[in-house]
Amino acid sequence: MLTPGMGAVSTTFMAGVELVRRGESVPVGSLTQLGTIRLGKRTEGRVPKIKDFVPLAKLDDLVFGGWDVFPDDAYQAAVKAGVLESKDLDKVRKFLKSIKPMKAAFDQSYVKNLQGTNVKKGKTKFDLAEQIREDIRDFKKKNKLDRLVMVWCASTEVFLKPEAVHQDLDSFEKAMKANHPAIAPSMLYAWAAISEGVPFANGAPNLTVDIPALEEFAKSKNVPIGGKDFKTGQTLMKTVLAPAFKARMLGLNGWFSTNILGNRDGEVLDDPGSFKTKEESKLGALEYILQPSIYPDLYKKIHHKVRINYYPPRGDNKEGWDNIDIFGWLGYPMQIKVDFLCRDSILAAPIVLDLALFFDLARRAGMRGIQEWLSFYFKSPMCARELYPEHDLFIQSMKLKNTLRWMKGEDLITHLGAEYYD
Ligand SMILES: NC(=O)c1ccc[n+]([C@@H]2O[C@H](COP(=O)([O-])OP(=O)(O)OC[C@H]3O[C@@H](n4cnc5c(N)ncnc54)[C@H](O)[C@@H]3O)[C@@H](O)[C@H]2O)c1
Image (cartoon, rainbow, N blue to C red; front, side):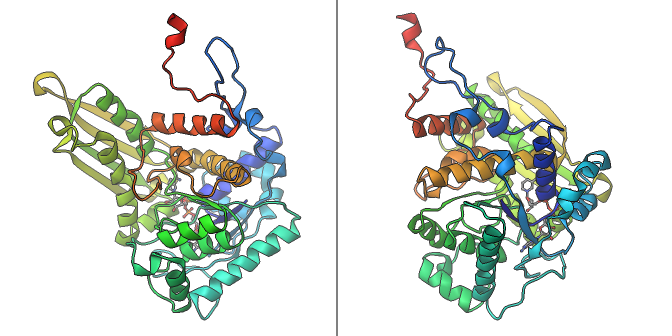
């Protein structure tokens, strides 16, 4: 299990898996570990745990590795991130100390507010990507592993638009060799992972693997890919509430979302380039869920604003406020306020675990390219070019579970249920 980036999310994930393996904790928030799946009719009473229904890798079989621009081992990084308390970290200190970051493929022009020393050297971006491939092979050999999976847990890069060099693999590889500015470091990890047959999931909003060149490459190598941006706090709530308004045909005038957070992610997002990437990712959901062109009376004039403010005293404990202006019968206005005092990495860690296990499963099931059925986990889900992304959490959840049923040859569940009343 490889993570570019060994910061707050990644180390909270690693520490948590080890605590669960030792029986010290329960994997709260993880669908693969705690979730069940109903099979057949409601009268049959068949509700296995997902992990008993599909052959997921066992937690005991996971081995962790990663890259970071800072040389801190996972224990030091976790202490600095300040997410977990020492009463938890002390129990897994030795384990975390043994996970040391490999040198990162990094370029400060893509993450302005970050400077580090544990960085690879190479003449071209292609050379750096080849070094990542070597790291992957070495990690696999050293740890005697059968399979690998990579989840991007590194910082959010500056906003990049798809360009000509992203359109096909040949142009992409030429651009890597020519050090083209449209090739960000995250793309080098993605290219290296696909080259080595390793599934790649993108936990940040960077463009990364969401380009035709890498999609084509993933398909040709039979590698599953997906992204972007873990759906954790505020957007999770948005994709729960907005479908409810739409289901009841309640109107929306505006949605103002603001956040204060003080972790390194917050510091990186303080740069306008990285913030723009995050903003685009956070803004998309409402438009797709509410479909203003189909419901102009309800959603034509939505004022949607997203703000992220770096505020160090809060550390990883983010506060996300939402003010939602809705309207009902005869246009009478109402307001909803959501104040989510959340813990970013506590919400993200189980998503990293689920993505790793499901992407590995997908690879073994012969699924390749974009894994839209895992949209459930992403703020800005990748999907086929001719489709719009599905953001509604409940549709995403149904899609995920139906995909598991389909993999195992079980009947899909439509929730029609007419047979109970024949
Ligand atoms: N926590 C959440 O709720 C959440 C939700 C959605 C997305 N994310 C995204 O997940 C990512 C990780 O979040 P975090 O809180 O752990 O951030 P973090 O800053 O604690 O950790 C990111 C790490 O990545 C490293 N890094 C940056 N560029 C790198 C590169 N090219 N190669 C290797 N390492 C690199 C940094 O040095 C840092 O240690 C961020 O992009 C964040 O936006 C987090």
